[in-house]
Length: 148
Image (spheres, rainbow, N blue to C red):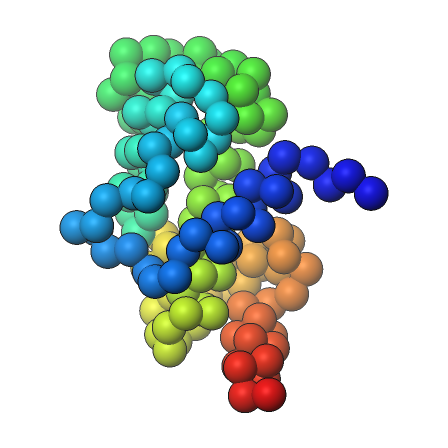
């Protein structure tokens, strides 16, 4: 079965990252290269999202900061990424959380806070919706794979 470009990109990203990037480190690939789209405003918004995982910025502020309306930003994301800015941002935050769960010994509560979730229960609900497992089970499964 062909699972598409999104899966191929996710697998490639997993192969690239060997350590967690700090806010002082540079990206290995530019935003346009990673998302496969060369649109300056879309790239700028995604860079802002990536730089503000812990304290997410609202779509209206993101749109204003690149000189467009919230509706124009919605259309831009739907056209190029087939999802809303809000959904894309949530996916970024959850991917960051997953990386932290698997690569650090941070508590699940601290991972939730580091990824912009106000409560562990909201984080767990969103994580389960995205990955069909809880952050606690993910951490446990990853730990057991490492100890084998």
